[in-house]
Structures are given as structure tokens and as C-alpha cells.
Length: 362
Ligand code: PMP
Image (cartoon, rainbow, N blue to C red; front, side):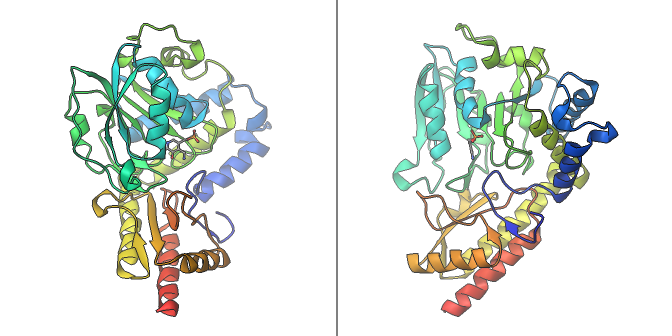
């Protein structure tokens, strides 16, 4: 935010101030060209440099090997809910899906249109407050396993991915809300997708990281716009891409690289999450909604002891310029999102406000 507000929005969400400034400049006069980024062709040298830098920086930050391709596609992460099975799941094949929240269940619904879905675990009966660990993956049966690495609405995050990596089943991850927030061996995934509007940049584009080797195996005919291979061949310029959104991604990726990369972001994210959860646990007036071992470093979900207090605290947040704190309607209470660009000072301000509120109510 540029206005002294603390922005805890779940997405679209806070981006670095430098990115806002540079993006604004690019709208007025892109790189001294005398033209706006909004009025240049996507096949010009000017934009070619933008998308090339975005792809190269993402590959560098994620330390991707040469088998993994980076694509910038339209349609949000929700398009990936069906584009993934279209490309990877044959009509008579079975994919394993983990039902750990609203996003996983939407992905399941779409995958069923293209093949069989084996829901190998679900925490739905407990309102998605934990991540189930007693699932069985079978490499002879499952074409791939789909996970939501971070559940944005319920505030859970898979911290140990080894049961997926070690299963021998190709792993597909919806990383919309925690991509670039922590170090992972990204090359162990066959496919990663993420809407850009949290840790990568502006809404209107999503990032797909795909291992080329898993493509071309389904028998169905694919429309070109749905075929990852066509996008790889065209270097994400199969049609007019969301030029401005990709520009903002490039600026955010450049910022993250200068910030010290994913390692530096992870360190800060852990500090923020620790302070947040310590505060929730220390104040009897608040209560975390998620099993401690599964708590997300990106989205902290908690409630207050009664609805009246929740209303009062939300009003106080609004008065103090704390934006985006209300929990999703199926969870209630509060959700404090702490993406890469959120400074530690914002979490300090929030936890100070929580302590102050608890005192006045104690
Ligand atoms: N998956 C996850 C984990 C999300 O958090 C979201 C959106 N917040 C989506 C998918 C859907 O993304 P989009 O709105 O870009 O389609």
C-alpha cells in the first residue's frame, strides 16, 4: 500500500512499493520509449525483453532445470483446474486428488470432466482445519497427484512434501498462494501453477511451470490455447498475452531477486508467521483455527471467543488502517495474509493492535 495502510488482503494483495512506482512509470513512458506499456505490440523488442526477463528470473529464482518450462497464461488459476487434467489425464486414467479446501475441491470437480478422480484424502468433515496425512498413492494406478500447497481460505500449508515426492507418482501443485515464499525443490514437480495476484504480480495472468516430459501423452485432441506444448513452442506468445500483468510480474520478480531471492523471502515470512501465531496463542481472547503443524505462513486464520468481539476487532482494524482482515465466510473470524511483499512492520502493527484489544477486553 502507498497510503500508510497495512494491507493483509488475500489476493490481489500487497506488492512492493517500488513495483507500483515503476509500473506507473511504465504506463506513462515505458523505458524512455515515449510509449506506454499499454500501447506497444506484444511482439515488439520492447515487450520481448520484458517477457524474457520474467521467464529467466523465475527460472533463476526457482532454480529450474532445462526440462522445466515457464509459461505465462490467461484465465487465472481456475483455468488450470481444467487445463491440467485436459493435458495430463486420459479419459480412462485415474488421478489422485487431495481435498484440503475450497480450491482443491474446485480442482476435483473440473478434473472429473476429463477422467477418473480418486480423492485420496479429505479434511472436509473437520471444516478443512488440518491436512490429512494417511493417504495412499499408487504409482501403478495414479497418473498424477494434485495438491494445494497452501490453502488460501482455510490457512493450511503442506510443510512436508516428501510423502508426495517419494510416492513415485508425478506431483501437480496449485501453488497460487505460496509460490516463491519458501525454498522447495521445484524440479520435483511435474507441474506447478499459480495465479499471479499474490506473490508474483498483478491479476490477469498465471504462471505454469511444467516438465516437458509429461506432455503429449493423452489421446484427446486439445484446442491450441489449451495445449501447453503450443504455448511452449510459442514462448507464451501464442496469442496476445496480458502484457501489463506480465510487466508487473517481471518487476516483482526483479524486486525479489534483488531482495535476496526465495531464501530471503522465506526467512522474513517465517519471522512474520512466528510473530503472528505467537500472538494468537498468547492471547486467550483469540484462537487459531488450524492444527498447529499445518498452519500456513501466508494466511493466518483465527477467531475471537465470540462474535461480538469479532465485530469490535474488525471495526478497530478498519479504524487503524488494517485492510483485508475479515475471514472467509465459511471460516469466520479473521484471516491475516502475509505475502512476500508485506513488511514485518505490518505484522508488528497488527499484533500490537491485537494485544491492545485483548488488554482493553481483559
Ligand atoms: N487456487 C488457490 C490456492 C487460490 O488461492 C486461488 C484464488 N485465490 C485460486 C486457485 C483461483 O485463482 P484465480 O482467481 O486466479 O482463478
